[in-house]
Image (cartoon, rainbow, N blue to C red):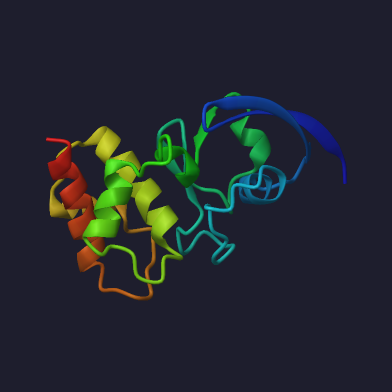
Length: 156
């Protein structure tokens, strides 16, 4: 297996990494960069636990070759908190009980963040559509939707 140098901009920090040509973004984030907030769930693009933002668009890191992200802006859940303080969306998930076991939460938050950047005041239908690729096995999604609505209200 061959490796090459890959220049990645992750969480507003650009560095070069020696990465296998067939390395998945999920593996580079978790194993090379130590960013374990991005969760490894199904490994098949079915659960959304590995959702990150690539140029502000939600992307499943378990299906994305790291090499396709060179020159693009990658953001993980670790990037949302600033100076040790949760973002409004993270705070809303906490306060509105949108987290249960927490495994799906990073992917839910990142998909929600992408939505709120595009549509600051989304309807419930828009929230549900944005989260359609993210599975939660603990809830009926009510508290998750309420969390996104609370974050949208906090930004108004």
